[in-house]
Length: 111
Length: 112
Image 1 (cartoon, each protein chain N blue to C red):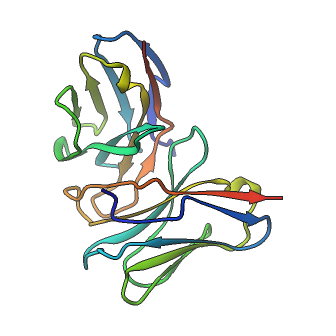
Image 2 (cartoon, rainbow over the protein chains, first blue to last red):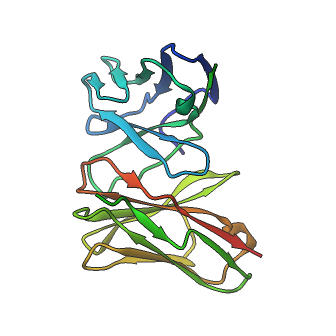
């Protein structure tokens, strides 16, 4: 079973911030939070990851709560090209740690 | 810098046959993992290889196997194909154990 839960779908107006939540209440101390997205018929694309501090890169920001039981991916100015399924995953650092994808959140950016 | 390359992109096989899919990771990446994606089950982890050793395996029958070569290229094999094996098979590579994975475009396998 996936270690994360996400809403199945969300809508966001073009140009507005998209805030995608993820619950990972059973996360352990050495597990990272990773976000990927998959645009229809393409391979998943890495977005961002973090351990406990908030992270930002050119694509998005990741906000992790202090207790690490949940996180939010923020796309600051959503565009139509951001329409995709977004996956939140928790995993340890090593290759011995399994990667389990949940069903993700289908984000629709609306003009 | 070339991305993860999977070949072939599309494949049609008959039940009972076997199939081999190939994955060339990004240059310098030592870890390769494989996933199966179907509409009903979503993205499911098959296995991960690191420096030619299988480090992890998902919950798939023994008909699914893989290997990694010294140049980090990887192959996965499915024997005695079933209709339910029709799926998008994705490969991802990482530099090392604690880095992000980069996915290929996948191989679309159809079993008839």
